[in-house]
Length: 319
Image 1: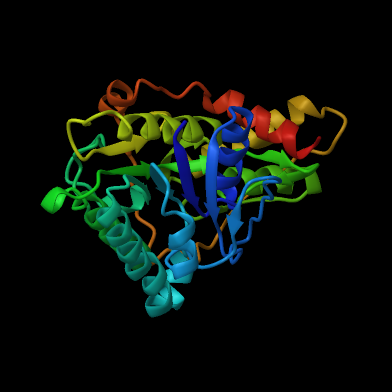
Image 2 (image 1 turned 30 degrees about the horizontal axis):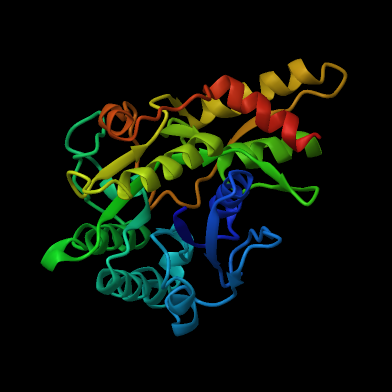
């Protein structure tokens, strides 16, 4: 049985992925410095609580057959405020981890983001859309992609890049709800609290939304891909549903579905407010993703439609 290492193994994605792997009886090595907003415990699984590029963490990962690199200092605002500090982790740390894995020929799957494509020259976005980062966070992710993509140079390890679109979804760990502060999860929490769903102006920002369970299925498939005798290429995968919506559409769908689920409760209003990220947020009125090649290469496709996913998020937050 393969030994799977996961950096950021206590985080939002890592925590749910670990739950799924534990249910399958997989052999895991986890690393997480617990600096992020989400901390999911994994009873019975060895975890090193340290920076993923530290000597202690690298020793812990040394017998892995594959490493899933999810750990990062993430977020546009954080990277804007502290470019040197976040770069030390996201770029320098990733390079040290990659060098370690290259020496031992351990494949790496790297967590990237659709933000790296910036303003693409052509739509829809595909696996071959080049990185054209427009802010510090996307620049650091783009550099992480290059580090991963060059692992095979000089006979080194294999690498795969997973560009993820807008994640949503929640799950439970030890009875507590685990969710990340993305727009759909935030709207669900606001609806539960009876608050207003605030939409950052202009509201026409169009995104692809993918449920966490589908994201985890892609990560699991990437492990199978990397552990093949000789995968044919160093791939970039599009972890996307192919289903897009504007932010204001998402808000109204949440508001409408909440009323359907709770007809006895007050309606949840929607309001457009000033956008604090207006200087870095890119508008794609015709934004679209075509993940056909990813589906073919990994043998996996997204099962969760946006309407079903929204309903599950609203039911989960209210459980």
